[in-house]
Image 1 (cartoon, rainbow, N blue to C red):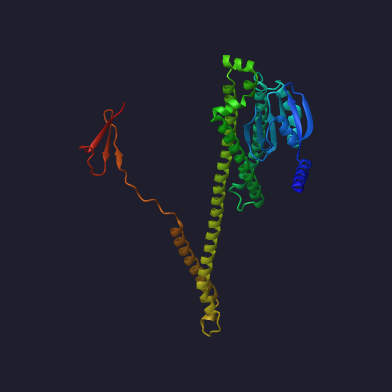
Image 2: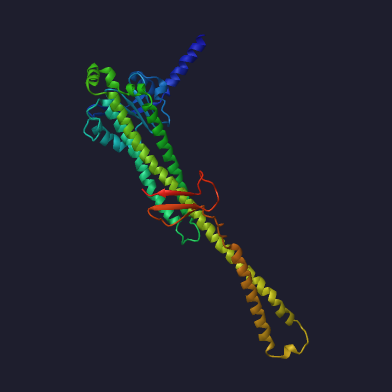
Length: 379
């Protein structure tokens, strides 16, 4: 038992020594910034959370625990309290400008956020959602012109072949667009999951339950739960608009691919038809070339002594080959032309209006409610 106890203490000490260290940046209500490093075990004990609450994965979620809001958005990891905001693992090149130059002023109420008159958690949530929407919109704004320019180059009818480099670029952009559509879908599902549960919306209003004065004020005039619901619905609609734009790009790519395939099929058909015409011409010329082959043999007759025999035989060869070739081309044209659609008899024939009435006659002899004609009066 002593050996087992000592082994357990040694393993705990080893785990404590290798515990992950978070690079944390802290924002208070006035926008003051404090950065520090702290072990994961110490951090979740100070915040009153559990270890699994700080097990951030590349999944998006917004959850509450012990009057704390835990936000996971891929590389953005945050913990919101009624007094401060913690950003964990902020060492990202794309986030430094937003963290140190924009977020502090937004939390202090100096930005253009609509929730500056509400408690601190409203400003923090709106600032994070606004940053994430701006990030998604920036990715879409980068992809959109690239995809449109590539498609314009690919669907040019003057091109007989498709540039493989453009197809490779389109493939990469299509993959990035699929990832962006997935991010839109995950973000909407996360927001919609909160909107469908009134208890979750109530739990996001941290100050309402910690400060009695704020609770009395909310009961008298301002309902914080409704404000939180409006806030989430606003960003849900923005995400829906961006998702629609991405969906239009996807439809444009699919339509352009159909046009590219049609152009390639058209060029392929032209080449096949040209090959067939040349084959028929070669067959016609070879067929009447047998005459020249016959006269080219070492035959002794009086016909080869005439100086006009060469031109006569050559003319017959080319004339016969031309006639056979034209006949084959006309045969090919008749069988390659699209057939006309079958004639569909009109069921209803409209006659000229007489005295403000329009008579409609039926070509087929049917009984329509006991009458053979129907008269419609113009209103």
